[in-house]
Image (cartoon, rainbow, N blue to C red; front, side):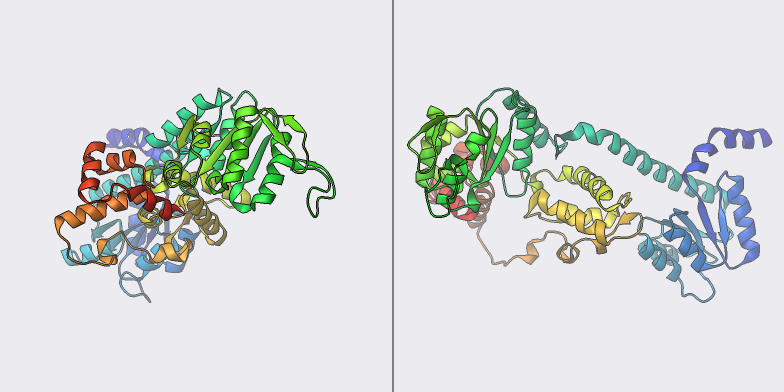
Length: 478
């Protein structure tokens, strides 16, 4: 037996010793000493205590990730320690030890969040197996975090993070587009990172050493936007006390990013078309024509094809801008990226705020995956940023997330206004919702619905809606 025991300690224990430090909590000193000796013989550096408050301090200070706690402690109700330990650290493992061995007691402990339930007297084989399982799980999570830290730089595309097939396709298309000095149209819902992608394209382009100018077309009136882009001469309008070049001159030889280009007026669209076609501009109030050579990267959260059909956007400008078109999916279309994005933002705000959070608890992660993310990646970043300010401990928990996320439960049809519908009406409503979500893009809607585009057209024609889908999509995204 001795050689086998020695072999076990030399072959298996060293990894466990360094990864897990159990805390033993029992107000029976005799039982405490026996259990501590048994666990040390298994190769773990155990900490024994009869004081529940000391055990809670060990949990809060992160010295122990596993507690073996007697269910009946002096001065505490049954499972009170378990409840307090999980409130202090939802990621802690607690093994409840009880002198009574009934199925109801075991189920109650598990329901309250215990990792396992062991009856007294404790069977060494069962205890050893439980400790090994917890140690293996703890080591696995630690290795996964370490691997994610190593992989994160490889999954970051110049500030844009993603590992989903949809985002990897976006990155690949952006790399190809960046090599050529041509205009690019980036489409996608608000908050998905269109400006970040535009900056990434510029950074890996042949003109990366030249300037990148950013213009938010939706934030300026038509007059101010013209002055911002084309510049003006002194006296051109009230307040023009000096001559200033516009962004197109400022970034000559480089890139100009036009955010929300769909919000520009028809007259401004005509002037942008002239820039693209003739590579020339005129400052406001000046007859002089100046030559410029800039790459335009435009972004929009609307379906420009629908805007063209509705007469709100010039068709010729649309084709000039969209010689290469990249669509960034919404966050709900790439939920598998949420853990990676969360880790990226955690690292960012750990550095910014001087914190050291290791991650999120399982229930906090579950809430992030169930949220509908109307604000997309920007909303996720804001949630992690605020949680890093208010949270304490090693992990960010559910209570650290914004209040509206804490209240939200899993998506359910019960939360919607319901009325009995025929199957044809259900199909009709569902198709319209998918079209609205896709901003009128019928090809993408057909892909999501799992039908051919011809079948979609047939359904729309049957419902008398073949002309309404683009218009409704334009109103929905306005």
